[in-house]
Image 1: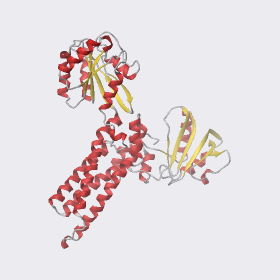
Image 2 (image 1 turned 90 degrees about the vertical axis):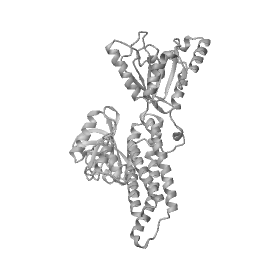
Image 3 (image 1 turned 90 degrees about the horizontal axis):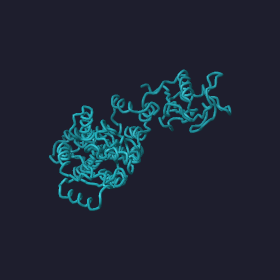
Image 4 (image 1 turned 60 degrees about the horizontal axis):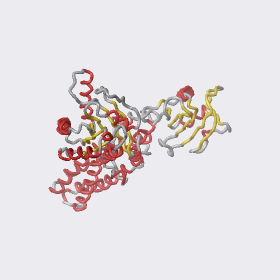
Length: 466
């Protein structure tokens, strides 16, 4: 990637719309734009101040493409740190293509995926974790993921890491200094203070690592499998949760042959519900494939909703299926839901409740009517209880990026080696090796340590115009 080149790309989604924004970045961005822009007031945009907007026309000789607004951002006070020009034109796909092709003819190059944000990183406008947060912010589809991405983009996570790295670097410098005076046996680093620092770093790293479980759920949503025997109301429950007719509902057993998935945001947390085929013995080949997919979805899910028809009230009959799920996936929460409770008398409900209490499921149980939408709010609250949102409410740093998680684990391992070496009284030169490794993994997160392959992997996931 040649940073001396001026790049261009569509910064808004492709397709027709009210307006579109075409972005230029590079040392020649303003001069290239000046060649094709004619201000209605006759201004020369090449000499205009930064952060100004100008009305005019995009021209190719005598040919007019569109009336536009042109915004100027002069480096280093721009998103990329370079000269940036943004052209707001009408959202016709033809107009977008014509303007971009004109700018390419004038010397600009098409931007690669994420190249604008990559340049912002390389020019010191963002560190690497903040740059990755830009992609997370664009992809956020609920309040919680948006909140975390905003905090990370503002530098909350990287500031915490940078502070720990700086303190560790100071001690590393003193340890390295001791190596220069090894023959004099001089100690420059206070071992007691160093031990306290290592304990504090270890504590923070463990907290950040533990937060990944919540962060990953918030970022990607929680897959929830709805399972049970045929015709107990699984599809009706999915429709009730989504408040729309998403799945086909029929009195005929085995209607759902394939899995149906849809997403729902509950109090800012995304849940992906999966309606599965009913679990039963069948000779129908197609239905058998659907049942096999049900067990595959249970494997992928983080929470299992096992639906039972309340009128059956035969708890023992469902025990084998539930026990099989518990044995194969002991870590997965299972909620047993008794459906069609609206068809039962109060005495019958009490009778079933008593039966359930005598049968030791050690599981959450809820009574609902999917058709009448009774108990749906209680079910949603139960699902939310499986997500530890305390850290989110307290605005604590939450790790959502698997690359960061991996670097944190490696940094923790090196810090624990340093702690062990300090307690064991090993020589400074050996301890310095582990300290350098810890500093390396800290640097990987914020971008002090990078390579072309790492940057390529990160920014390849961005959209072209960002």
